[in-house]
Image (cartoon, rainbow, N blue to C red; front, side):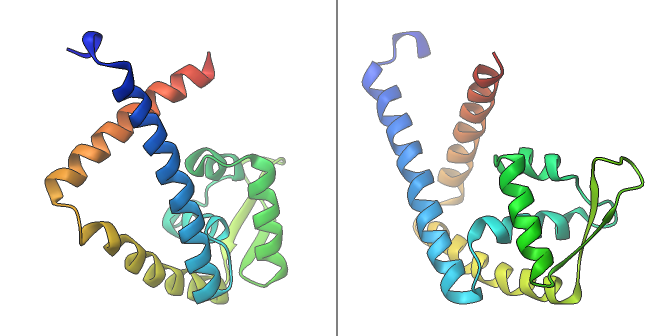
Length: 153
C-alpha cells in the first residue's frame, strides 16, 4: 500500500510534522518562561536528570534523549549550576563526564515545571481521542526511527 501512496501525503506529513514541532517549541517555551522563568529546553534537561533517579544521565545521554547538541546541554547545565538548581561533581564512571544532581531548589523548579507541562499536555487531550493519540504516536515513532537511521548514514 505504501508504495502507491501519493507524494502529496508524504509532503503533507512532513510539513505538519515540522510545523507541529516548531509551534510546540515556541508555545512551550513561552509557557515555561511565563510560568517558571526558564525555557522549555532547560526544563527538559532538569527533568531528564530528575527522571533518571539514582543513576544520573551523562550530558551525552541527555543530548541524545532530547535531540540537543552536547554543547547546548553543557550550556543548560552551566546555567542551572550558576542558578543553584544543579550540583555538578566529577563522575566516578569517567573523567570526561560529570555527575549531575538536582539541588532542593532544582527539584522544586522541576515540580513547578511538571505542573506547567501537565497543563500544556491537556491541550491535545481535550481535542483528540486516545485512539487518535495512539495512532499519531506510532506514526511519529516510526518517522523518528526512519529519520534517525537516515541521519546516521
